[in-house]
Amino acid sequence: MQSQPIRAALISVYYKDQLEPLVALLKAHGVQLYSTGGTQKFLEEQGAEVTSVESLTGFPAVFGGRVKTLHPKVFGGILHRRHEPGDLAEAAQHEIPPIDLVIVDLYPFEETVAAGAPEADIIEKIDIGGISLLRAAAKNYRDVLVVSSRDQYTAVTELLTEKNGATDLEDRRNYAAAAFQATSHYDTQIFSYLSQDTTLAGQALKISQTPATPLRYGENPHQAGTFYGDLGALFDQLHGKQLSYNNLVDVDAAVALMAEFTDGQPACAILKHTNACGVAQAATLQEAYLSALACDPVSAFGGVIIVNKPVDEATATELNKLFFEVLIAPEYEPTALPLLQSKKNRVLLRQKPVAFPAKQVKTLLNGFIEQDADRQAETAADFKVVTQSAPTAEEVEALVFAAKICKHTKSNTIVLAKAGQLLASGVGQTSRVDALKQAIEKAHAFGFDLHGAVMASDAFFPFPDCVEIAGGAGIRAVVQPGGSIKDKDSIEACDQRGMAMVMTGVRHFKH
Image 1 (cartoon, helix red, strand yellow):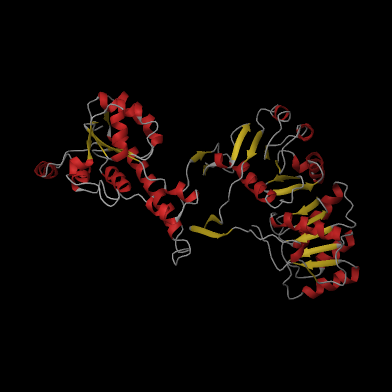
Image 2 (cartoon, rainbow, N blue to C red; image 1 turned 90 degrees about the vertical axis):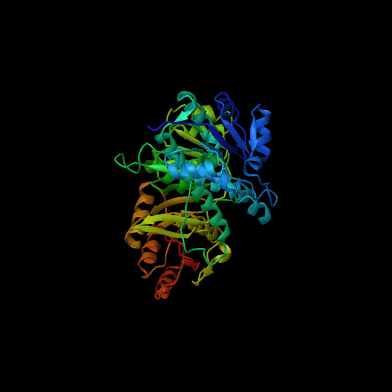
């Protein structure tokens, strides 16, 4: 197992919390400690005897501390191979003592960027000596143990306690891999920051996300699944089982859809397999939920529900009558939470405000594709009336509402709605006509009268057939992107039936 005792350690860390037990253990084993600046002061306050790096190298820190550890006596102590007679002879010739343990974390570059600090401050958080020390120690893991994060302090303390101040090759290799993960993530964040608005932007795809959360399984039980990212930054999970792969996909779709409803009016959406099967706005959250549920109570079973207002007791009472997988809300009133927690596995999430990535990435073939997130949202001001009849104020409100839902529904899609309520949608069809027929059939199945309702399409109508079918069902107004060479055929079909049509000039395919 190539057990290696630790005789000397270099410790230079930005974050010093949780380090005390490890320092105490190293002291107890008589480990020679080397350190710099604030870390040296911290170690000495713990009663440790410390040799400064300046004393080791015979050279002071220079350039405001930018150069402290970059010296052959430091890197030679880490990198020389203990099993190579030539390396040992050179180390003795140049009086380079071995360093068997390196404990280094990196300047908080990512956190400094996230805090919106000035560029000069951000640049100073690009670690040079620290990242070099980690790479050197990780490269020579045959002889050196590297600790690259304060999250490892407890585990390393336990390891060294168990093995009486020594480590095995397997231990050192594992920690070396973790160090390279830390350095690669760090470099990715620096590249992402510096490449903004440069010729390098868009020329390379570099993604590094932590932490990793293993899922019960992927889309199906025979598929493994992992989520990479910080769910805790977005949600507090107040109740229920661990989120699954499919839960997360639906939660993502739900959060994206509800982000469209920012006018302050209570709103509720119910999703199944990433598509909305119920969406409504109303004067109260309870009314919004009941209206959303009425759209398709069959599909709502086992779905994901999201609301944009705190869940009150009245709404919770109604929600508690339905089996659903996940509920997402900005807050839960104290009297509502116990009602909703009555089902053991029901997941309750409290959503926090967070900025979402501007880019979307997915695997494809033997690579990846990236695109800008679809942040375009059309309002009444974007509507261009192209028919003889203009929509009424109520119809305009319904068209805006329908267009929001249409944007977040799988193509080909047709959305049928009235102001403040989704009536039905046809989703993911290979034909827009089929999508419309599906929507009409579902609306009728759940008792909705489509006379006076509106229709939204995610892309243009290449033929007038959809308008003709919609008009026959009682639809009175249509919103669509336009752009077909046969737009005039659909416009004429609307005019013949006294329907209003507006065009937005913006297509919202979703695959």
